[in-house]
Image (cartoon, rainbow, N blue to C red; front, side, top):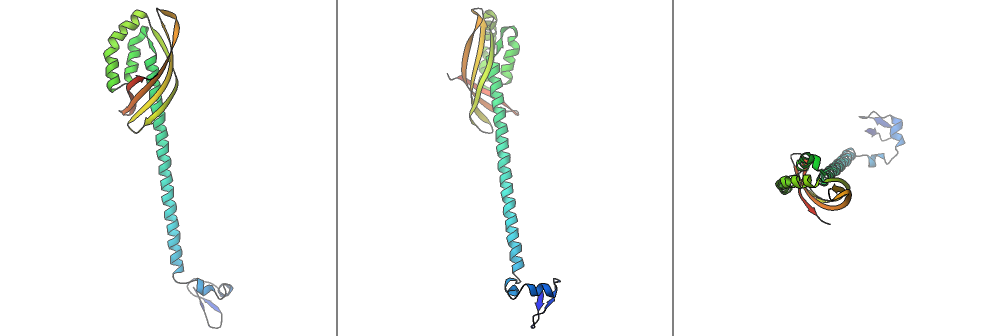
Length: 194
């Protein structure tokens, strides 16, 4: 800080200011500069920096959580679409493979029910020479969290068999319940809703 002598000439002490610099501040300089001003400024800057850091951290966490949720939603929809496609696409010529595709994306009650009916369905599909070519038109998440999801799926299929060799169209409105097991989303229940 520049010391002031009684006759108005500043002498640089401590901060290395020249006499010209001290004089240019004028008479009010000593009232503004005080021993606590530098400390108060450092505290204020520290508070601003802490606030910015906290805000940046919060925004980063929010962005990460939204990205994680969007990725989870995409995984849920992909699993539901594939499960519905597998369920509506069955061919008597390779029903074993098709039923395994259904079961590979299934768990719980749905896996048990489908497994229990596979032998009977295999005979029925082979006898009728049934071919169903499914197509998922739309899918949307009704609700989801980190472990479970409910998805509505709109699907169509063209079904050919002995009684309809030209094929008939079928429309499906399915509600799929999914659970997150073993690092992937699996269908635990399927209901026809319309």
